[in-house]
Every structure is written in structure tokens, then in C-alpha cells.
Image (cartoon, rainbow, N blue to C red; front, side, top):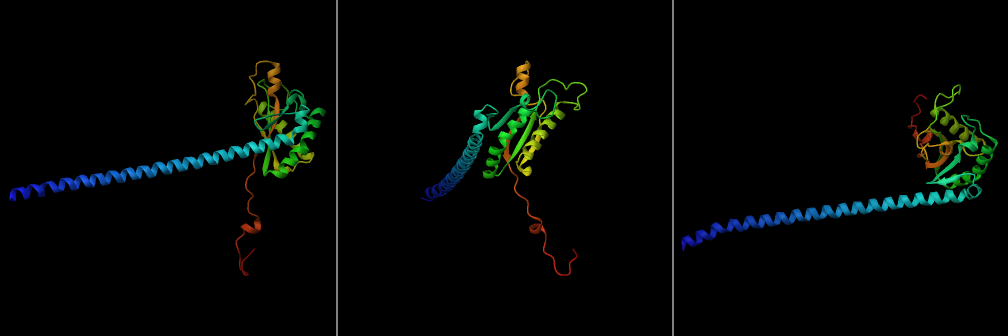
Length: 223
């Protein structure tokens, strides 16, 4: 009898260890399940935010396209991927940064719809200048295509402001011969790449006014 009791006492720790292992395994499985649920929840939230962002971008694009209905219908500008395109041949002569009469008319046609759009959207307008891949003619005041595209963008920006757009909502950018819409294979393709584009970008948050940002001072503090 004593030997039997000794055998039972020896088998008890084995089952206890097995029970502990099972409990640990269940705990690990629970942790993994919680982690998987958390990842799925985070992924779902990210997808929802991305869907909301794309929907907002699409709504802004539609609003801008509707505002530009008249100049688009007349074929004065193009509208692709949310960017307004104006042919460089309409705006400027070759290697020039001086607006032509046709260019002035096109920009004038854009002021009212762009102004209306800015009134309803807290955004900025980026005016971007682009050239073809040919080098600047010798004797030109600009040493390279960067300089020419920058000045053309500034010329259009200033013209839009002079015609009525708020100066704090428009800025210029230069891309030179980079980002062509088509390969620079011939005269026609290069003419397509010489262009100015107008696109919308988010407006930075307004900084605190000086009154709000100044610390409070006592009567005896110096000013």
C-alpha cells in the first residue's frame, strides 16, 4: 500500500505541470487574438481615413472642374488630375517670359472661377512653370530652363494677382524641363511640355496672432 501511495504522489506533479502549460498556451493564444483584433481595427480605421481623404480630394476636383466649366468648354485650358494646364505657346513666345495678348485673355478668364473656388475652400493655388528639354538660346537673360520656368511662373502669378486673386493665396514654383507630359521627341511634343499649370494645395494652419502669442506681463515689466 505504501508503494501505491508513493506512485500516486509521484504522478501528481506531471499533471500539474501539464495544466500550467495548457494555461500558458491559452494565455498566449488570447494575447495573439487580441493583437490580431487590434491590427484589424487599426487597418480598418486607416482604410476608412484613406477613403475619406480620397473622397474629399475627388469632391475638390469636381468643385474646381465645375468652376472652370466656361474656360474648359472654350478650350482655353485643360484639366487633368486636378491640375489646370495652359499651353506655353498661348502665354509666351519662345524663350520669353512676357505675356502675350492671348495669354492675358486666358488668365482673365480664370480669375473669376478660381476666386470663387478659393472663397469656398481653404487652399492655395500653386502656379508651376515647365519648359521643354532644349537649352536656352545664347544671349537669353536666363542661364537655363530653371530660370525661365521660374520667371514664367512668377509672371503668371503676378498677372493673376493683378487681375483680382488674393496675393496671399497664390504662389509660384519652377520645374524647368522636369516632369514632361510627353517625351520630348519632336516639335509638337516639346510644345506640349512648355506649359504653366495651376493646382490647389492645402493651406497651412493660421499662426497665432501676436496678441495671443505674447506672454502676460505685470505692471512693472518693461516693454
